[in-house]
Length: 311
Image 1 (cartoon, rainbow, N blue to C red):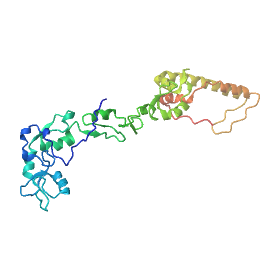
Image 2: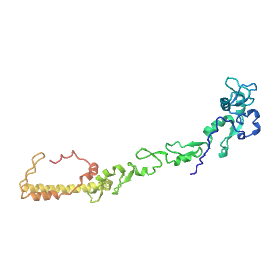
Image 3: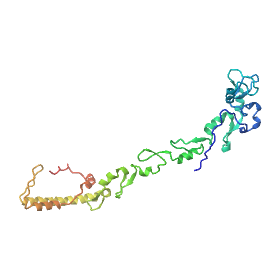
């Protein structure tokens, strides 16, 4: 973007009056309005209290009296009292129509002199302003400042993820923010923040569903919950097989004279000759991934109180 930066004094010198060429109608500028020192239309006219009551700019008078306590027009000695403001003359001058002193830059404003200060200080689009963003060295015309603020590298922004402030020049912050969401690299379909990814990868391992589906834990859990009814029937079938095998084991133990202890009773020692047979029967029970059965168990109907845990 192009910004016109002005290398000039942004305000006129206070000790001078208003240049005559700034007034829209030069014929309205009477000789009585001209300061004898700066040769401009008087700014804050004062009466030096000489016999002829000559007037001049207040600042011009102050500067003149530092060098000579005489009237600059008639050279008469000025009285010791301070010059007096000429309110009547000031009112007449304030009604003159004047142009903005930045007209050479393109400002087209014209208005009464009494409105000039307000326009030049707060309304003129060609006044030179510093960028309000801390650390930005740019200066731009007031009318260009909004465009500059949009692209200013020092513009403060708030991250939508970590809620912390950062500068617009750090444009990569949202992508590198520890709280920004990223997909799991194992393609489980889960979005996690960057700083929680290591912990997620610890639990995002390949598992096997009761139906044989394999994949990352997140995908398998989603697969399990999307078809709870069929998985419940599979679980019921496996439990029936497990009960059948358990009954066979009990029968095998009973034939060997080993009674099944009640809950809380000490477990008997299985004789060495039949221990391998019993162990083989137990290890042939279907393997059920218990963490993955939680959604199924939660959806299954409950009949009575749950059985006590095994000893």
